[in-house]
Length: 495
Image 1 (cartoon, rainbow, N blue to C red):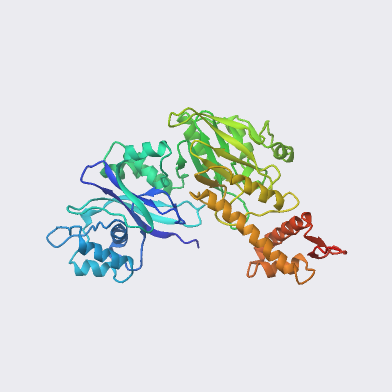
Image 2: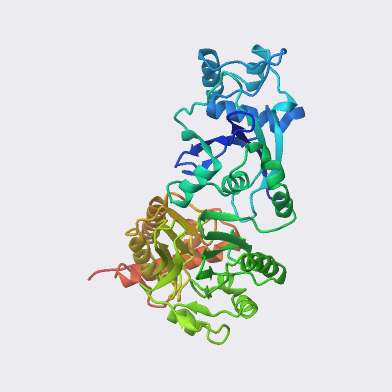
């Protein structure tokens, strides 16, 4: 069974009925939403009071991250910020004291009136790390002030929802989707309004509605269950633009998952966001499963690269082709700065007709299957070409992107690093292959268990495809060749 980690988060208001809440910027190197602004919070720990599990976790995490301690003395008062709390916070962060010991030593206890429940949000199933996060509203205790120390967090700030949303719309900050959803619900209101404002949405998400995942205005990620290659179980479609707007890679073939997508698109259409076209990044089944169904339902065309169009001609009708450098207009930019567009980048390697799209205003790179944040990308000959794939990766380094949005896995605010890491991984694999061939001719069946030790049989066939792609690349570079009988490969021998 898939593990979902319990967590808690706090909307800390400056005072009762205040519109200002405290947000923290997560460290860029963090795996989960690194570089994004969010509300303080984190995972439930074993030490958290079983009777107050989520409230205890929320209190402990808030103290660790900000120094704010939501606990009271027997007379109802709170401790004040100062050297004593700072010392205990350092001891807690260094694992030299438990949070329960801090409460005991200070004669403090949690009080139910300090926590207003908003509800639970569970990370959608597409993500490799999933959390069931309970959100609470709380107020800054008198005499305390939040302070961010260097570490997992970079900074913190008091802000109204309206101001934070305006900053996000300008592209000045990144907001985690639950944070964005919450700020939109309380914009122009106080934090205490969050439960009533978010209640219906949270209930619909628990019932299976697709989460509203926006990483920039007018850019919605839609993770959908597909029949992809392991370990991927979902493919991210993207709804981009307002007028025009495009649906990138609607992948599900299952009717129930298509219906979830239709429900979302119908809701968007009712709000005036009508689709202009379906855009396919390439021809693989987990990217095209709902393309024809969407095109028919919304009476819109399908666009793709010329090679993809030819490959799909007996299955899907592509009415317009997209080539390298083509621009897809998105209408007025949400921040009012002028026109807005996507730029097509032809990136062969994973597939001959593979397209990546760059959005220059918010500096978004929609990489489709060029990079995955859950596993390495499969390069499967003869359509997969490792030489071209490496060239395409190096080309992507030239784009000044702030956010990398893959087809599989979560987004990354370290776009350049992700591309560099992907290149480095392939270089390392090639070095390992050359070393393995140095002992003499080897078949792919002999190379696979040596290069992919411990890999399951179910995945070994994909590993063999990677080895074949690497061997073909070495052959093109006159560094390897097949044996005379064609059964094995060896390093190229110069005469």
